[in-house]
Image (cartoon, rainbow, N blue to C red; front, side, top):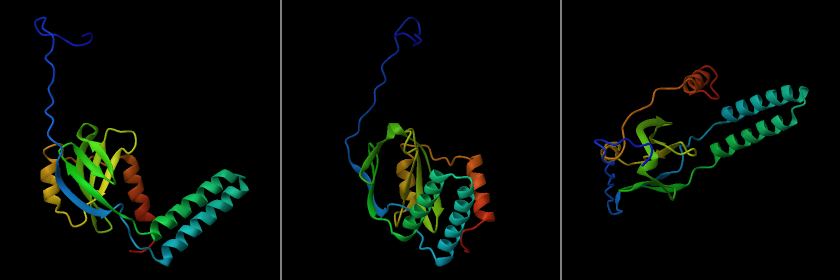
Length: 180
């Protein structure tokens, strides 16, 4: 084959992939996304920010950008008032299934655990353009059990924080939308 190196003029040996029969290793149900009930202060702060940005953009005659900001404010409102649906999550011998979509091991990278609003999250990087990360709530599932299963297939490693992550945390700390 062109582009492949040969040793002692012998062609490379083909790689054999052992296919296990499809079976579920772990199944659990959890909300589709993290959810936190918001108070009036949060909505008032969001509305004030949107109003101020809209006034500034009104003077600049950026009508489309005003519409985008109002739309994003509406999405923030809906996501904070409508509780998420419950989805079934599975770890199988061939990959991870969440929300009815299967992600094979070949398309998955490292994994790590995190917390958001008191909920344990399983984060799995993918090699796909979208989604580039699966974020699955663990619910009442044992984190150690999930880790022991995933260790057989994926690398357990938390990535270092990017510049965007650090900037987002700083912004959230300096300008909170609600008091804790």
